[in-house]
Image 1 (tube, rainbow, N blue to C red):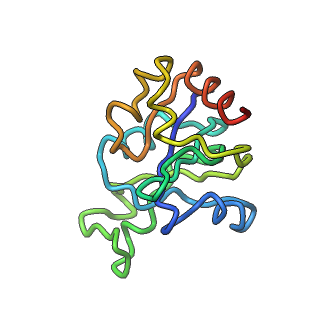
Image 2: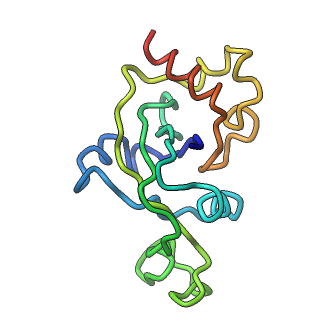
Length: 153
């Protein structure tokens, strides 16, 4: 199993929105960064776990855990001319943008804030703290366990 961090602005889609979605599942659509797309396309696998991270808000941080339930899905927003994420160079036959389906696993007991994460040398190599703008990021097993431990404090 691999571990990930998926970022979403809570005003656009929050962990609560995921919990309230049909079957507590949604597509992780609208990603328009090639590095993040490549991770979605090539690295994420069904059964992997991901932290759900609220970004671009008053108190950014890890708020929940979700599970990858399906991979290799053409991002439907890339094919929809009415979508802000429409890409005329993408087609069903040759999709440029790929997504995954995620399912709510559990909310964390408390939000582990970005400010807090920056305080721990155990996390100094974490992608979030070094290349934080990426919306899909790998998390090591040690980082994963450490953050889960923080959430329980």
